Amino acid sequence: MRSLLLLAVVGALGSAAAAQGRADGDRAPLGAWTPVPELPGMGRAVDTAAVAARRRALLARLGRGVVLIPAAHERQLERDYIQDNDFRQHNTFFYFTELETQDAWLLLVAGGETGGEVVLFLPPRNPSQERWTGLRLGPDSVAVRLSGIPRVLPTDSLDRALRSALQRAPGPVYVPLDATTRDEKRVADLVFEGRDVRNLRPLADSLRLVKDADELARLRTAVAISGLGHLAAMQAARPGMWEYEIEAVVEAAFRRNGADRVGYPSIVGSGPNSTTLHYDVSRRQTKDGDLVVLDAGAEWGQYTADVTRTFPVNGRFTPRQKAIYDLVLATQRAAFDSTRPGTTIGELNRVAREYMRAHSGTLCGEQTCDASFIHGLSHWLGMDVHDVGDYSTPLKPGMVLTIEPGIYLKQENLGVRIEDDVLVTATGAEWLSGGAPKTTDEIERLMRARR
Ligand SMILES: [Mn+2]
Image (cartoon, rainbow, N blue to C red):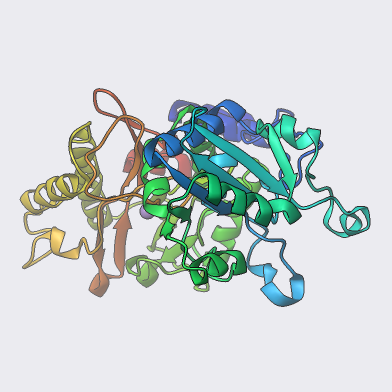
């Protein structure tokens, strides 16, 4: 009865809302997938055609040279403080392989008649070690089949293969030079040998700007799961709840719906904390009359959502809160309406600020409200929550960005941020995270129906 009522109430709020009703029921969670038993980690299948196309695009852009990309390493409980998080693959390695396997390397050789060589190196399997770590992918025909890479060799042959590649294709060696390779002895050795080692990241990152169909499918799943988390938080919220309780509700809904982890530390800022942009300790008890800024996104299949909703903990906006909220919402709409191929994030930022300034009236006192919009409007979204890529790049279909205006009035303990994830299409843009209630009416209606 209760869940029927809930379904009836949220049914109008879109498919994500409808899915919430079945999260507790007998159907599969939104993030369900069919595991590949032979794959370590998540056991999620590789889109072999997609990753092959990404590797071809990289080799074509390089023309000539050798590329060497390490996977993330196996982690140790004692050394790595892994209570922070579970194993997560390096994004560059994942982008070109979609493999969640540890201690692997990818070697690419650009040029030549074939257009390029691709070799995957995997550590040999160790049955006694696998009693501790679980199954690992080894250098054998299973890895060839699952990765779609025809040449898979044991990692102890990497140095020989690398030398040979450098002889056949003299020229630069491209390696992702970032925190993930800082401690890689193999990379340091190349530098000390006097090789022409260059950073692969700017090129690899530029490829990541336009998402392919597989990436978009992953992002859509992450975003839909995130919408369910926000919905659950609004349904559970009531004055007197601690911020960490709201955080627990959001993150439980993420996990229950198949999320792998959070895409970033959840922000649950109530009352005064609603005006602190990246408040993430969640230790305050909410009070009647507070607004709650909830900025939380689920990660699924290595891709993350980034969604913010602001709601009154008691379920009713005051006229003052509603006025500020509606200005933020209208500003977001203005920026969305200007989102289309050819424009830039800088231009959207200008549109949003001008809209907010023009419609402030006396709402924010002496200054116009854009003076209290103290962060950027948008960032790229993908495997990183603030995804890689040049921010001056004109928008193209397939790019994904956030649109997140906010107004933060510290003296009133009143912060509002509304953040959605947006896909650039051929003619404009599409809201990806439209599932979570957003107008004050929708939010109040949903919260009135709380159990
Ligand atoms: Mn964001």
